[in-house]
Length: 423
Length: 149
Image (tube, rainbow over all chains, first blue to last red; front, side, top):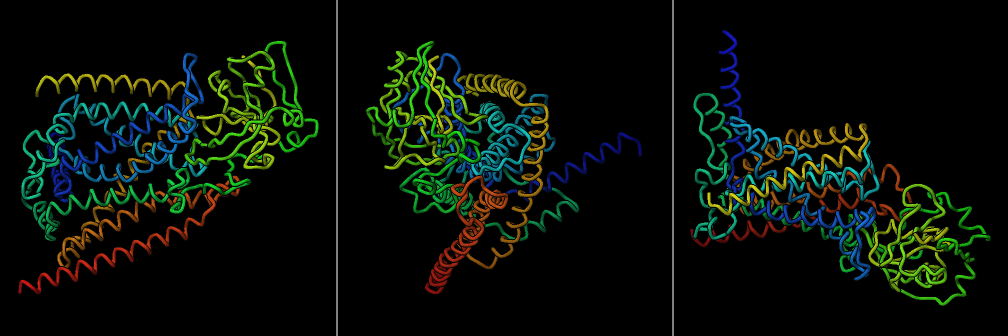
């Protein structure tokens, strides 16, 4: 047998195996209409995660020309709650979508043209990135980081890869999507899905084979499949119920209404010192000594104008009470009552109203130094908080003084303040 | 193909190619080589885990259920399928949480629950619910069969 015959034999073998795989996987539910129904929900979920993700990312690392609204004060809380909850709902949606189109993995030939090769490569990238994005996003909310990369950098870059691959995928599949977009074009009067015509998607009839392959096919098909309408509804129902369960059993970490149903979230809303969860404790931040030092002062500086305040001096100034949420990038959020000195009053004392401020913490490392943009400095709700829920700040919540501002992620609500400097 | 779809296609694919370049640029600029290797391992592992394990297991489970399916009404089969899918999805979400809790949360307000116990309870509730719905469906289908006899 020469090389050409061997190649041809191998090709025939692969072709048969792939045909067998496709016929075994064929099911009434695996229909372009199901792929479109799940695909548009998943696409919407991905876009929602992308937009809320960009917002959270640039709030933390703004480009020089960027400004952000400080109102409504619940903006970040809602945005990040939606980000995490939509991401969790995308898990069953993605699995359902992949289930629906799984037979396409065994197309033969795998690709006919260079464009076909590129399309399949972009699908592989799309699928892998989506799976990884949801997995690392979920595991990150458990504060478990079993990887060697920076979560934020990779999660951000992958979000671009995913949205880009999504656009390519929609572009490639557009005629199929348009064909099966509307219910009345997809489902006949008897409630059954219409058969897939040529060019209307590749999830069509099962391929037939003869000989031994055909025998195996017939053996696999011996068990009669359920009627198509039922099995399509089963897939959609299972994905819907799973997404609903995943959302309802976790969203209570940010949505007070669902708090009684919080079974699986990594946080409970009122659990922690002063009825507020903690991300980094004073011990973990290594600030216990400095934060409890009786000689602690807060320095407020603008150029060569500088003032320092002890905690007693801050308490002697006019106090403002606000109700603002702590909203963590990990998705949980809790509303709390804060009391302290309005940030803009402190800024005015050094003649720096309307300017951006650098906020420094006693702690070191990530988020020890952050920037507070002028819009937030001027907002009357932004405080140097001294009290939380009616008592002096707990050490783990930033004693002796912390920043609390509306519509900002928790990591930027700097604890254990050391200085505020106008830029 | 009409003109609108053709134009939309070109725009979408062009945007996609541009977006991929942006993503690649961010990866190269912000992730160290060691991190990129780690990411590559995760991407390949994701495909292998899904296409090589999860999907074939789902296929075999479905094949088994179809065997059962000859003896029970289609609606009962559907309820069983939905139950298994919901249980498996919740298990996939909660398993890493159980592991993270084993490794030790950073403070007592992180991962406060006994997630293993709660997952077991969820399966129990799912089994009970599904058994109740299946029993109802079986009774109903027998009644219909009885009345047509």
